[in-house]
Image (cartoon, rainbow, N blue to C red):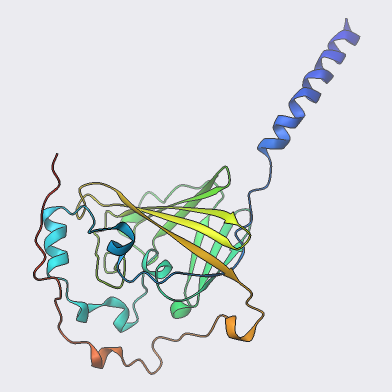
Length: 243
C-alpha cells in the first residue's frame, strides 16, 4: 500500500509540474528607453471632450493656461508626463518598476510586491501619485491614487480632483513598441471613466542623437515671465450626456 501511495503522489506531482511552471513564467520585460507620442490635448486621442460633469465642464471652459503648474516647475503628474514630448527609461525588477523621465529629471515608482495603498494616502497626495502594480498575463496593470490636484492631465489644461483614480495598462506588443492605455475615473470632474491609448516606441540610447538629455527646470526658467492670462475655451458649451 505504501508503494502504491508513493507512486500516486509522484504521478500527481509530475502531472502538476507543467501547470506550476506555466503559472510561474516570468512576465515580459518592459525595460529600455522609450519615446512618447506628444499628445498635448487628450481630447484629440479621445476623439472629443471627456464626459464632464457640469463642474468639470465649467473648469475646462475657464481654464487659464497662464496658470500651467509646470510653468513654475511643479511636477507634471503621471498622466501628463507620459503624453509630453520627452523620452523615458523603464527599469524593471521583481518587486518594483521604476520610470525615469527626461522631463524635469523626475522618477516614478510602481510597487510590485503586493502592498496596498497606505490607508492614509489621501492625506498625503503626491505629484506623481502612489502607484501599485500587478501582472495580468502579459499586461502590467498600474493602479494610482492620491495624485496632487495641482497637476494637469495634459498640456491643454484638463484638470482633476483629489479623487482621481488612474488605471494604466502597459503591454509590449512587439520588440520595439509598448501599448499604453490610461483610464481616468474622477466623479467630481467626469460622469464616467474614460480612456485613451498611446504607443511608445523603443530607441537605442547608446546613440548620441537618441540619448536621454539633462533637464533642470529651475535653471534659467523663462516660462514665468511669458505666462499671460489666457482662457481659450470660453466659447465651450456644455452638453451633458443623455442617460
